[in-house]
Length: 262
Image (cartoon, rainbow, N blue to C red; front, side, top):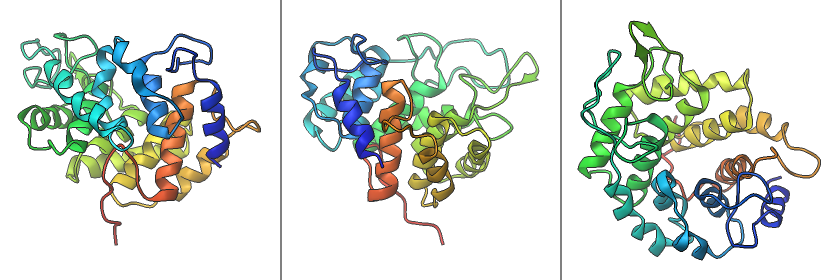
């Protein structure tokens, strides 16, 4: 199932030690961290000399099981990054709530904030003030359909649609709540829009909250090619492995699973 994908992932590692978005490309933080979270062979020493940028927000979660010292060391750089808490809102959301940004000191966006919150929770820092405010930002930015857009739920009076992958990622990063219930319901839409990224985040989100992901796992496996890959992209293959391993093994480095519902 996922072992062939992992073999492909190992074969695509760059000689310098990390992974690019495509085999042969220069390594980047996001692809490398997801590959390590998926269980790929490799020395994470590449991370020591890399400019991780926003992807440091993923590091405490992705490295938590196999490289706990490195995961813990990544918390301080994560907390040093900030979204701009003084931005003006073009919608009904509260731009003063601080999350994390793609570029330090700029507008807080949903995806980097979700990864940062997930990482802090994984390191036992759910009560940290930045983590609490990050969660508050995610709830404030939820779209009316239950999903999340890239950064805001509406603009100049017009509601924006939620993205399926973002609903899965945010639900994966949040403790149980009404907002999560809405997100999980919205994320069921992946069954009619079964991309690798949509399905992988949906599987992880359902597992985080004790729900059975059998339908999503089946759809994801149907997207696996004869060579074992799910995508030409390294990060998508790594994410698929993370989801399938979590479904099979009942654990993941990214978060602690909730008790099954029912």
